[in-house]
Amino acid sequence: MKNLIETIKNIWRIEELRNRILITLGLLLVYRIGSFIVLPGVDSARLAATGATGGGGIVEILSIFTGGAFTRASIFALGIMPYISASIIMQLAGIAVPTVQKMQREESGRRKINQWTRYLTILICVFQAPSYIYATIDEAARPDGQFWLATSIVILTSSTLFVMWLGERITERGLGNGISLIIMIGILAQLPQAFAQEVVGRMGPGGGGLVLLLVEVVLWVLIIAGCILLVQGTRRIPVQFAKRVQGNKQYGGVRNYIPLKVNAAGVMPIIFAQAIVLVPMYMAQAFENPPQWLVSIANSQGFFYNFTLFLMVVLFTYFYTAITVNPNQLADDMKRNGGFIPGVKPGKSTAGHIDELLSRITLPGAIFLGLVAILPAFAGMLGIKQGFAQFFGGTSLLIMVGVLLDTLQQIESHLLMRHYDGLMKSGRIKGRSSGAAYGMAG
Image (cartoon, rainbow, N blue to C red; front, side, top):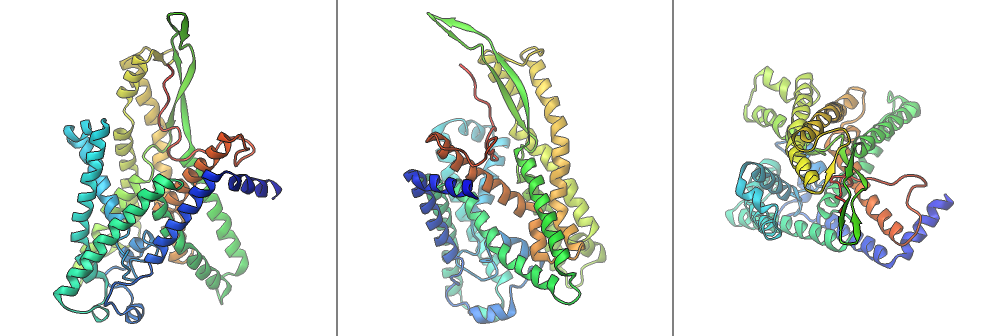
């Protein structure tokens, strides 16, 4: 406890770090306040009585990422998700379109891609806003008329752009990645209520009592620890740099390493997989009496849904790792900088060696990621309420763990730069982005 208080004092002593933390908290507070402002004309009391319609499990999943703004018909109902969708589309375009791929390597090209991403965000909002209004807000709670519809679309689109601006300001002047922090704060906002409901349920008649509640908490902590190991796990490949003499100085001759991450794909495979397995849910809602096989596939607690989700996560992990980590490029960069892996010939042999190691470590990472994706369903089978079960795995847990590690890593970097002790007595905190690329010695 004494060390914790001293660490907090050290953080507060660093003026730049203190200002960044205060700016981050202030901008996140603005976002949370905005998530409670209801769209003009919507009867919030009637909406609370009727609830969000047309969604079932879909509404609950989408509401997690907006901190409840989705179900409250807030001006921030669409949140940052349209921008995330636009970013994913541009990222995939960089793989499929050589022109975009070339632009990603240049500073001016990246600025232009960022501008295109913003335009695409507006386009996605214009299409998503009316769908959200008609599919989610109960007809009795919203006014009629084209003017109200048009103004609501403008408000929802402008609010998404404002949230995007908040995220950029946090990244620039605050602490951590602003977009990721906005998503995380929306997820964390649901945790206290979900945990309180679980406590009430367990302490009530037939709930199992305090013992089962403690077992749940211990199990949750163990799952979080496993996710931390998944995010931080790396396989180090040693790299030796040859010595070279320029003038009177000697360069190189040092030993470095390539940190191949066990989960190089991050949370993207779960996001892609969930986007696909949600399609049966939409199809089931389109039928008044959907067929039984479609109902079983669309059931988020059922076997077929979770088995499909697991397989899709494993496949997408391999796919996204293949497009994220390029062994040929790593081998070329090493050869160009005079580096080589001891015992392996430079060039194609090095690329093949890296690819083989990457395949070996990706398999357990993909299986573990698939298990994390379906853990909420297992939690539900054990009698845990759905609200709290969502925090036992899936996208929510991975985003929380990854973003918190990234933020703590930045705080620790500020402390170490000023010659203070880090946040841990031994070792360093590694976020999702740490060790993503190796530094070339020169």
